[in-house]
Length: 425
View 1 (cartoon, rainbow, N blue to C red):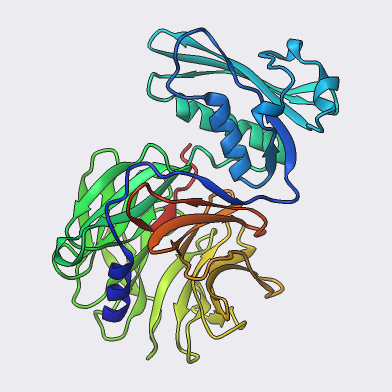
View 2 (cartoon, helix red, strand yellow):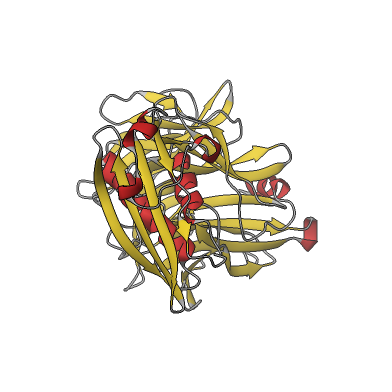
């Protein structure tokens, strides 16, 4: 534990800014051509370019390849103004047009999604947004467009949590942040001179559980995001780590060493009672619930090296899931329960991988060499994780099929420990 923590501290640098920036690192060769025309405005300066936010969201998903604005023949604001033949000539399959107008203290956004090949309107809606929520409105619109075309619920309006740090040695300062899924609108929810680890979202998106060393030993806290109110859930001697919420929000799985070796426990959040799940002479850690709450995924070295196991909560039976290579850890279920995402070590380093549970086939998704802490988007299309870029720690994301990826570096400093929120409505 001490060696791992020391290595983690060395990876942190100066304080990360509240906003992270998106860098597309790999596009998908199966991306669908789409054009998001700049939205017409009522003449007043707007705080956000709504069409640009939508276009960036769709590109980041790996499902779409937006047409550059410089290649657009014209810029219609409504479906009636669209000449479908012109857009077919540009090989565009779908077209998004719209208009933004001031309305009182907020904005009214009218958008339409058009099927160019079929020459028809697929979607049309008017969205109102308060003065500070125009970007949020753009994320909502992105979700509607994404679902209308792909049939998959969009996750652009979700959020991410992450940890930053600044300084060196005894002068280090850690921060826990929550931001939009694209890294913008970051807000600090906790500041500490001691390490913060393993943020985990409650299923309703209202709370974070995390590990803090502020009392000079690890303890698990639960914090309400709206109020900042928090409680210390555990503070046993030894390890208190890796909290994971059950799907119903009533329990927290975690790693405790209060009885000797690190083992998996489940805490009833309301009653504050504990149930020991594993009982083994090995190290058992990093629990994650299955989507149906019937089993727990965890990392154990009981076979001689870190591998992933599944514990059935009803029968108590334990099944080893990973056999490819000698290091597989930090497993997370896909939302449909049919696959797991994990960190796999190969000759190329530590990388994000996906394993199908039925076939056991494991596929490496990322191209970096020092990946850790994978967290899956609630729609299962992307995985966010921490990695190294030069001497800095950054967040990266890769699509579930490995065909598209992007990076979210901070303007200054390192970022670690990402956690993707559930759907928030």
